[in-house]
Amino acid sequence: MFKSEKGVSAVEFALIAPLLFVLTFGIVEFGLLLFDKAVITNASREAARAAIVYNDPPLEDEVIQEVIEEVMGNYTDRYLISLGGGIPPTIDPPTYVDEPSGRYITVNVRYTYSFLVFQSLIGLLGGSEYSAGIPLAGTTVMRMEFDE
Image 1: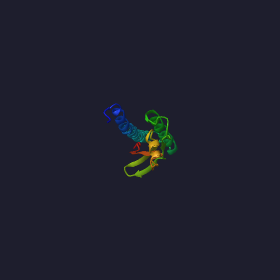
Image 2: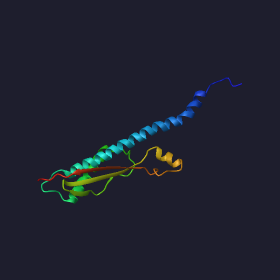
Image 3: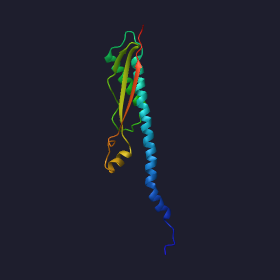
Image 4: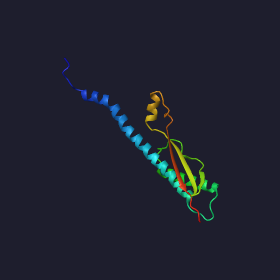
């Protein structure tokens, strides 16, 4: 009865295209997420490195906080891929631990990655704890340099 196969390819493509697009955008989204996680980790490392460098006289804690914020801000402005959305990264006040081997500083950088495509898709499916984005954090602990 129906011998013509015209349009079968279009129907097959219409059935497969949404899955193909979700897979393609998923690869891009999670690639950006992993890249941003690496940037946040490196930003905490660069900020900690700037804080531990030997200075004569030693810097006060408030000045160290300013140095950390400046280095972290410069690094994330240069490398973070947010595509114009999302909240800028934040940095927790550094914590110091004095041990017999020296003084250690801990630097924490936090960022919420906002999806480009999947945020809308998650909203359509009823929402999730990740509807507002995925929290990323980078933590670095380094020993401060002192003159002995």
